[in-house]
Length: 198
Length: 128
Image 1 (cartoon, each protein chain N blue to C red):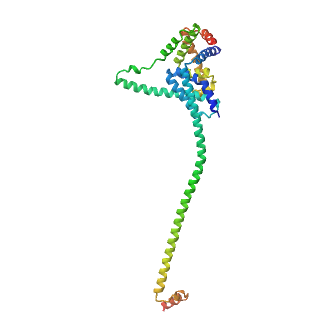
Image 2 (tube, chains in turn red, green):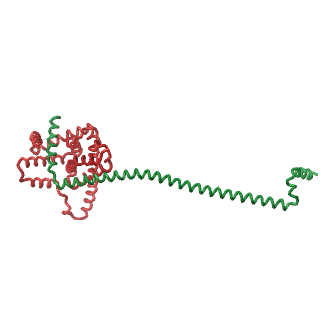
Image 3 (cartoon, rainbow over the protein chains, first blue to last red):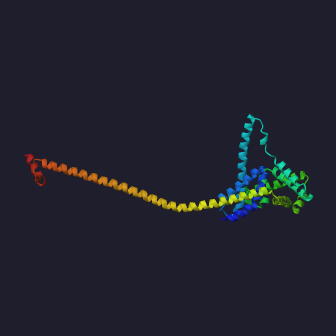
């Protein structure tokens, strides 16, 4: 049975990655924060007393389910918005911000930084865009397997699929990412070099 | 496979690097969310403890409640028994009173009914 301190340590360790992972999936920082907060609360309330070793898998599962709930709500909301907007005029004030614009503005903030940092920032922007373009299952498998450092069995349990599927998703994700990055003019060697520098 | 893992590791390394320079506003919100989750865990833990304590009290409460119910049942049963006995006594009293009235109102003396040979004599007498 885990203590409050152990849960705190675990959440502190994963919260940033969870946030970024959610941003890649939902492409909205505010929604991502809400989703991560919900997932943290659910983990603490319902599974807080579980063994600490179960936390990564449980948290990922909760996070994925919370994202799915968000998409379901979005789907219903979009349906109503479409229906209502067909009766009224378009509401330009209610337009959602494009996350890519945010990403660009973040880049502009760093224009005074040295060239190397700027180059790394650009590489990162390309990677993030590529991650957002990945099919959701591939992205989930990639993030859990490589970023969360979960093994194949844990990833399979969190995703609710077989270990073979996890391996397939991971392999496809890496190939898709490599292809997208190459299309953006970033070679594998350059990528590995950037990764090593950081 | 190794090349695949190298690519993945390079990507992850860059992503990890970015985490360190995450927007302070987002980091603060995440810290707040974590604190809320921990508070929720503590509250949930306390509720569970209170429930378990409440369980013991509830057990006592149940015992007390069942004892009270038993008392009510015993009282009702006693009342019913008392009513039954009283009714029985009153009924038997009526029968005795009716018997006394019959004996006193009869033409024969009461001793005649106590004489065991009277019925035989009466039967013989009626046959003549």
